[in-house]
Length: 297
Image (cartoon, rainbow, N blue to C red):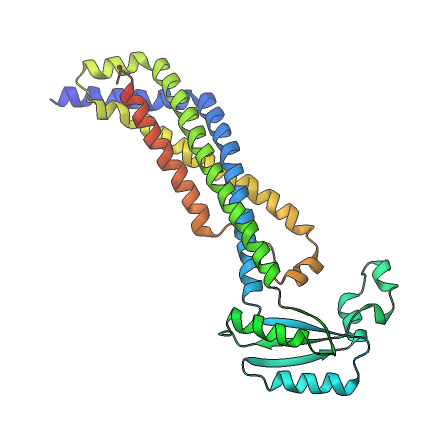
């Protein structure tokens, strides 16, 4: 019994050494998986930032009432007081044309914007609302404001949020499709790698079975290699995407960040860890199913 266990240990050690000798095949497999996971991670990164922008604007709780050029100071003051007294409104701030110009034309801004006169920027009243104000109440208030003589238009940013939601839905659909493509890529790459490795280690496998090794004992190194390849492919994709993200974020327009109210962010840690775990699980399952379909193991 001890001799059999000793022989089994030796053969297991040989199997692990054989695995290390096939590093070129495994490296190619990891590279192929990384390419697939980069596509999925990129889609998830876009979806994450779109969701952040949508949530930011859906919780903005504000509207802009643009005033006509012919509106008198008395009409503007009366409108501002009426808005401040309206239930659900927390603040109504009058922004003159000159103030609007200063907010848009900052230091180092485009020369064409800087050349525009103050009257090119409409005066407005920035209205802030309570967080529990419903969309229906906001829409009803906007309809009433639009009919006032001093009001040119009212922007509630609802259309902007709806467009972002539609774009986000498209991103989620694309991510789902890419996830299926990644699944197919993992099954194809790891399945082919396992068949190639098993063919190259056929002698070691046959010797192991001759000395009494069980199928589970023989499969274990291959399943672990499949899990390692899947996890390494996902991790490599995250590393590449992280480097590219840092390069792009360093050149991101800070004025655009101020306008959107959200800075670009990388994938959350749970999502990144979930991708690595998904890669490892897919790799292990694919390796196990591939080996079970082969008569040798």
